[in-house]
Each structure stands twice: as structure tokens, then as C-alpha cells.
Image 1: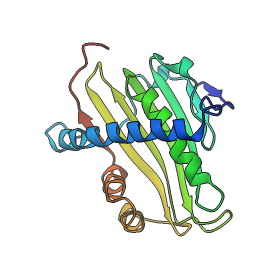
Image 2: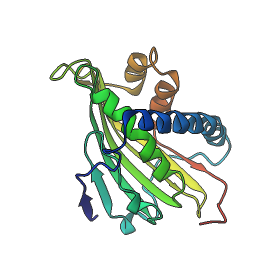
Image 3: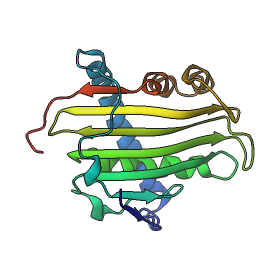
Image 4: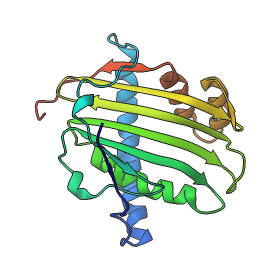
Length: 199
């Protein structure tokens, strides 16, 4: 699959207060969408993970730690991105950069008709410290086809290979929804969604 590396941050010039306002709005929107996604996953039509049918049409746009995609990708079909999320660290601001980049990433993904995201997570307390938890994820949706899928793999806890349940135990005190999603997605899940007439 072709790859397009990116090195600019479209939100770099925005003030922190504007970014936090955008972040708050996107978090509210995401919270409103999560129950719907969970309900869909529980209905008949749940299968194991496969790559999307449009995989061969993807050109992946790769972004480093805290980078946001440019607005020029709005309307790309399919929109295929890969994010490095390996510096989710409290002591050096990596966790803050991660949180500030997510709203723009989310805002670009939601309106897409066909979207595929690969990401690589690592959470640690200090730079160079032992990885508390990490995994590689693959998530996609196709609104025209009415399908979506997610899978996480290469899970680690305390720098060692682990099961999803072990990683969820570490994450649960901080984010129960993320812990639940990690366990569900480790097995790989594909769900049926309503078809969008706009795609």
C-alpha cells in the first residue's frame, strides 16, 4: 500500500485555549456516539475482523506523535491514516500532545465514507520508563457498505507480551470504556452499520 508521510501539524498555530475548546466539543460528540456504537456491536451481524474491502485502494498518510492531519484530507475516499501514539507520557507532555491531536483526527474521520486507521499505542509514566501498556490497533468503517471492524494486537503490559484482559486491568482505573473496548477488540470484531445515503 502506498504511504504518504507528513511532518506538519495543522493545529500548531492555534492557541491552547482554542484547542481545548475544540477538544471539549469533540469529546462531547464522541461520548454521544459511543452508546450507539456499543448497541450496534451487540446486535446480530457481529463477525470477526477482516481488512476492509477497499484496502487495495488505500494510500496511508502517516503521522507522528501529536501530529494532526491537514484539512486537505477532508473528503478523501478512502481516507487511510496511521498514527504513532507511542509517546503517551505524563512527564514530557506527550500525553497532553496526544489529547490535543485527537479532536482534529476525530473530526476528520467522522464525515468520511470509507475510513481506515492503524495506530500504535504506548503509555508510560516517564520518558524511557517501562511501558505500562501498549498495543497496535486497526479500525475501519465503510458507510456505503454498512460495515465496520476493529482489532488490537501485540498487546503488552509492563513491557511484556500480555493478554487483552491484563492490559484492561491496568487501564480500567483510568478509563473503563477504553478497557472494555480493548478486551472486545483484541478478538477482532466486525459489525453491521446503517448504510449512509450520502456515500
